[in-house]
Amino acid sequence: MENKTARFEKLLVKNGLKRTAPRLQVLEILSGRDSATSQPYLEQVMGKNADRVTLYRVLQAFEEKGIIHKVLDQQGTANYAICSDGCSAHEHHDEHVHFNCDNCHKIYCLDTVKIPALKVPAGFKVEHLNLIATGLCASCSDKVN
Amino acid sequence: MENKTARFEKLLVKNGLKRTAPRLQVLEILSGRDSATSQPYLEQVMGKNADRVTLYRVLQAFEEKGIIHKVLDQQGTANYAICSDGCSAHEHHDEHVHFNCDNCHKIYCLDTVKIPALKVPAGFKVEHLNLIATGLCASCSDKVN
DNA sequence: TTATATTTGCAACATAATTGCATTAAAATG
DNA sequence: CATTTTAATGCAATTATGTTGCAAATATAA
Image (cartoon, rainbow over all chains, first blue to last red):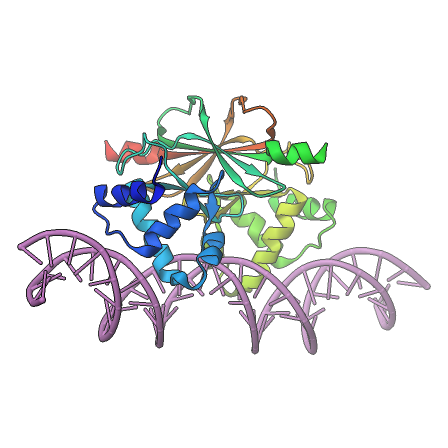
């Protein structure tokens, strides 16, 4: 925990990715937030440090390697969060619930809340589940009251 | 059930919408399908009968009135399905599971499968739930075997 | 230090979505 | 039934979003 950057560098190397500025910056930004981060927000924060195309490619590479996972919010916008340790490139365990706050629009990964098993009609074969709850997050419902 | 068009016309009037060709055509198309219909597909089927902008506006109006509901698939593309009777403009009961087939990419509204109640961390207030399952639909898993 | 392989940034392109406005069409009115 | 009012459509222009090819730059391996 002492040197965050060193940790990120190791993470990149472990996944066969070169240690480049834009990649490190994306990891910095994502790790500094308590909720998933939208692509547009990332773009804005990165500013002129990286081209828009580079950001797309960084995010895509990270997702393929299982470093981050993508959540679409209710508007269909991509949001990204750093994966917890259980994730790996091909078997990606992100089947926890995501919470999309109607007020601040943050997306929280509720890692502790798992998606309950589901009984589907005969013939259907479920591979993955994706549950997004919307409403007010803890912080926003505080403010309202 | 005898006159589908008459039924659609009544539906429009009931919601304060004028009975126009593009609107009726959208209802026709949606009602003739067993799964939710993607915006691009609708656009293609409507062809030159309606401008793309009109389609956007028709869909938006229908959604606001609770005539149809929107489901985003795993790519973030909007898909639309006619609401069951329980739906109304402001309290929209579409909290059934949607199934996105990885093979044929259809989206099924599994009206019979309800989303189980969820235990979320303290402070979070859930308003709506949105569960998308991916995998193989009944028809596609038949073909594979 | 040099060679190599990857990654980046730019430019061009493609696609998707939104807005303003003039025209057209539907329903309300007398 | 003619006319007025209101809503909806289509077009053009604009903006946003995502993709591709390629030359230049940079990180790592040799």
